[in-house]
Image (cartoon, rainbow, N blue to C red; front, side, top):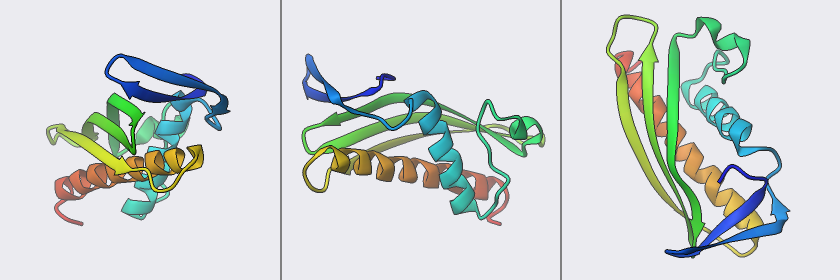
Length: 138
C-alpha cells in the first residue's frame, strides 16, 4: 500500500486506487515520522527520532514496527502492527501487537486520513505504555 494514492478496500478481492486523492508524503517516511512525533508527545521527551535520522544513533530505545494491515474498508480503517521495543540496556526486548479499528467519522477522504491518524496515535500510545512499563512506570 506504499503508493502515493489513497487505496480503499472494496471487498475481499477488490481495491480502488484513488488517482486524484494522494498522501501528503510517502507512507514510507510519513508513518515513522508520525510514530516518532506521537511517542515524543506521549512520553514527554524531545529525544525521539526516526530512521534514517542520525539522532537515533545513541537512542535509549529502538522500535521496529511491521505493518501487517493498513487499509480503509467500509466505514473504518484497520491498522495491524507487530512491534518490538529494544532497550539500550540488557533488558529483554518487548514484543507487542496493536490491532486498531478506527471508525471513519464523516464523509470524504479527509475523514479517512483523520481515522488513520487516530489509529497511529493509538499504536503509539500502546508502544509508549510498553516503554513506561519497562522503565518501571516512570
